[in-house]
Length: 252
Image 1 (cartoon, rainbow, N blue to C red):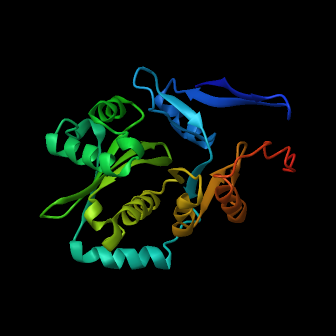
Image 2 (tube, helix red, strand yellow; image 1 turned 30 degrees about the horizontal axis):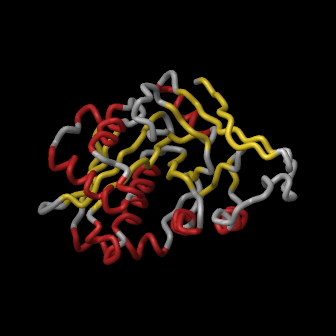
C-alpha cells in the first residue's frame, strides 16, 4: 500500500495546517491492514483508475465482543413474517449486469443517497473495483427486499453499500435488520471485525446503539469510548475554530 497526504485548509491564526490522508491499495491481501488503519474506499471520482481509500472516523464491530441486543431481536421478530432469506455470492458469480438488479440499486440511491449519488455510471464504477468482493441478497419467494455490497478479505468484512425496499424501512426497520444480519453472519464465519462505514453527526449513532462491540477510529487507534464518540458526533455540525488538540485534547 502507498499512503499519501493531500493539503487542505490553512489557518495561520491558530497554526493549523490540514492534510487529508489517503491510501492506494496495491494488492488485495492488504485490505485487512488498510481497514485496520482507519481507511475506507473512495469512489467519489469516477476518473480514478486505482483503488483509493480515505482516512475517516470510521466504525467497526469487534466480533469477539458482539452479541445481539434486545433491539436486534425485536427487529428480527418483526421481519420474520416476511420470510426473507439471506444469501451471499462472490461478485464473480453474481450477474452484475442484470437490469432489475441495477434498477433496484439506482432507484434506492435516487431516493435515499444525498443528491442521488449512485447513478448508473457510479454503480458500474463501484462494481468494477477489485475491492468489492461479495453481494448479499435478501429475498423471499415473492420478491427481492435488498442487496448489500461487501468487502470480504482475510478476517474482516466491510458492509459497504446497502440498497433495500424503502416501503419496509419504517414498518419493519429493514435497513437495520440487514446490517445486523450481515454482522451476525460474519460472527458465525469466525471473522474478527465488520466495518460499517463512517460515524459523523448524531444520526450515525444508531450504529453504536444497535451493535455491541463497536469502536471508532480516532485518527491513531480504535477507540471504544462510546461517550466520547457521542460528544464528537453531537459537535460535528458546530464550526470549530481550532482542532481538538488545541481545544484541550489529549497528547496521547
